[in-house]
Image (tube, rainbow, N blue to C red; front, side, top):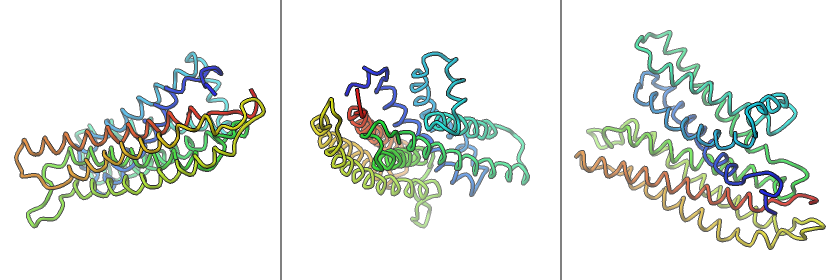
Length: 302
């Protein structure tokens, strides 16, 4: 069924569910690194990158409200509406993490301020995870059987972890002045980047399995007017293959970029460019999956 016929723009929804949860995961990953050493000024400033990604998705989705005044109705539904809970948690995440980012520009440093920073980063992680959880739960709608299955939140969450971890790895690689220490071990930011890339690799496998399982679930879903959704879901094998191919290639590029460079500025720039290109490829793969998901929309009636 075409979502446009009932007032939805799937392109905006696909951008939102691709960008905002992934930006939240990347922010949480960087906040975890900052919790160990809060005085990493460059890394704290770099929180702007995943927050910008999350903001782009949120702004794209905000156009669904029609007018800014409708935001009041969204807020009024917090606690009883999954959509309102999703919007509220995303707003809370953007506010909390935005405040932590702004705090990173202060000049004063002290043990007390470090403790406050750590508490702020804990809130960043908690708010990011809550936002992703509520975004994944927002599609549990009984009147839309193609959305009200466990594979939907599982695929959204695993996709967010995959893309968000890849973005975190790209940021950490970009900030790493050296890939290794003098004794040949990975440098500080590089160790965190390797962990993020490993998380992205594992999440991609989970995401692919969730998408394949979802394709099987769709075969048994239908209604009296449209019949089975199986025909509408014929594009799923191609979408899954495209998603895995793009994201897999992107993660492979990130792994390549995490290898030690020769120390020259040109080599470092080349590794950084490859890493960022890999991040873009991962996001492209996740976007393909989200577009395919919205095209599988089918309600119980008209």
